[in-house]
Length: 175
Image (cartoon, rainbow, N blue to C red):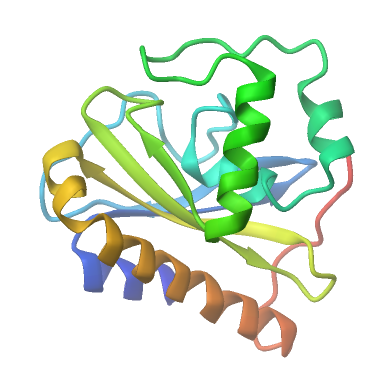
């Protein structure tokens, strides 16, 4: 319902990601009205946590020690020339995500594609997942502020429904 609403408002490819078996996975998406293909990204995808807006939106609100453990010994591989490949730079980016309330992927996962993502939270106050839209760079530049408002609104709706028990997601497993 919330994902469909986000898609209907933005007309962009819209995603929901959430926790499953201790990792953040892409759970569902609705293709935008304009053709946009992000290679290798399909339901069930779990890779490249450091390069995807949906993952950064959630990682930013996890305890810093947990994030450090998740990346301990894991190389941050460049997916594009814009991918953050240094853990210290990633932590700076995650701090910016916490301050503004949403994450950006500025051609970090796919050349020519930008994403904006906002986390939603369970009753325990921890992030349960994120709503994301992906947009070609030229359209993103024109619509970034509006798109960030729309994903934050979707996330706030999900948070409210989760906290009042009107929406249920599988419990988050701590890894």
